[in-house]
Image 1 (cartoon, one colour):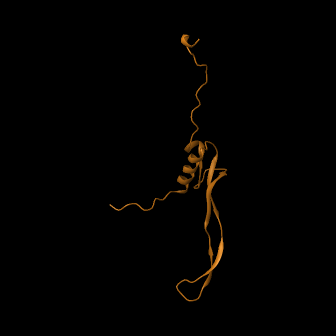
Image 2: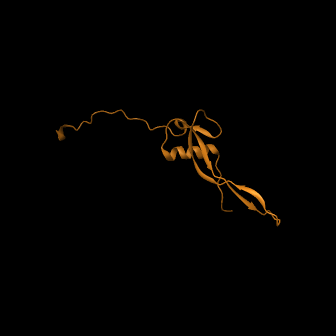
Image 3: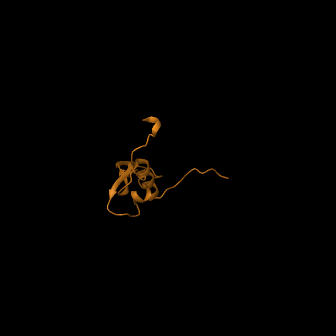
Length: 97
C-alpha cells in the first residue's frame, strides 16, 4: 500500500483546528489568508520573458465574522467551553479541625 504524502483539509476543518488550538469558545470565526504580491519577468518555455505576478501566502489566521459560511464556524459549536463546576466549601471533616 502506498504511503500517504498529502492530507487535504476543507476551509472549515482548518478554522475548527485553529479555534481549538487557540482555546476559543465563542463567536463566529472565519479563515483569514494574508497574501503578498511581487512582480517578475519569467520565461514560459520560450526565450521571450513575460511579466508575471507571484502571490505568496504570508500568513494564515482567524478573523471574527458575522455569520457561519463555507469558510467560517461557530466556536461555541465546534469547541464548547468546559462545564463550570458549582463551587462550594470543602468539608475537611473532624480530622482536620
